Length: 490
Image (cartoon, rainbow, N blue to C red):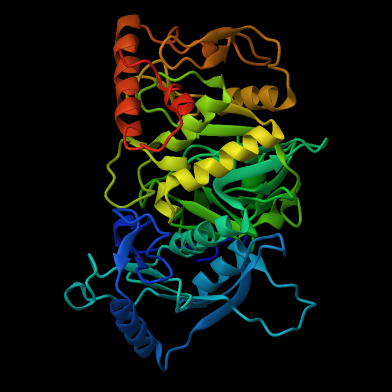
């Protein structure tokens, strides 16, 4: 349905989020020693992939399909040419808006390095194809083909291309990152790492700064570049006041997934979660007024780790040492938000996702962490931990941190206005939290002070610290300095 304002509203059917348990990589000579095999990167045999591929092509035989030729990567020196073949027209529009488009003046033949085939109407046969369900997202790095079946959720397309780039680019000296990025008028760039629902898209879309991209980037010897040509913003509770750039981007050409709409008036209801909390808007980055086109910039001066702390104990903002930055990057603590993946309940679920993007990282997290550490040291980057989650108590008791306060804290950090202010070390996590920040009440900066029950806070912070330590035990090949940056486990 075309909504009032011109955006296209679509429904993704049974699945309104990603299906991580149905994602596979073909295990062969090209991937055997480079992929970090396990629950995230599940292996599929070349024979099973070939069978699925053949069956999917047979299913599409005689059907109308839609094709987009595009790229993954805004820097031509590292761009991956891809061909997207879809069963549905709206999926083709999604690909056109999300990936980097070909230059319309360039009439050269598009030679795709990867082909993605998206056929929601085709279903895998678990008994025959050795899949977990009828849904399947499979990548073959030898055939250079991606198959997506049994789901209509368009986000599977963008994350499949992201997974491919995450595997290929480290060999070219490029660090792939699950982050948003923007840059100031003076050229000072900032990266915002975080999983879905932590605020990457919202916080990078700042009217006072230029947007590079909202979700996926590479960091090369030349600087930062966007993997995509569009944005994929969460829409739940979207408002013109808090997120004006995203609000203005929702117009003709934008694709809205599972957003409630009045069938008579065609008015959109962004507050409704009747279908899912994971309502989405896909639109070209050119719909953001102050976007960097193409999405390429220099080296960043600040790196921000965003976490939606469901326990409500982390400081709203804190400065990290380089060792603490590496520790928190490998830990990737946040809370999964309802709707972004199948199987989640209505409450956020505390989780640790290495590099703030483990579901999309084919290689071992240490590979990406080593690249980040080298770049942080070489470019003398300041690192910050920002809690966009709960304060004053855990989820269900406390309140979500107000967006204007988070924006003010980030602006102060990135602009250098937090340099020289009094910092207080957190007694357990040992990060340095400012006691004063422009445009933010002092009491908001005190994580413990916001809790009415101080003893309950102490128990909660001790519990979260233990979770950090337990999770980090799996990283055995880590320098002692990084391991020593762990919170105190009392």
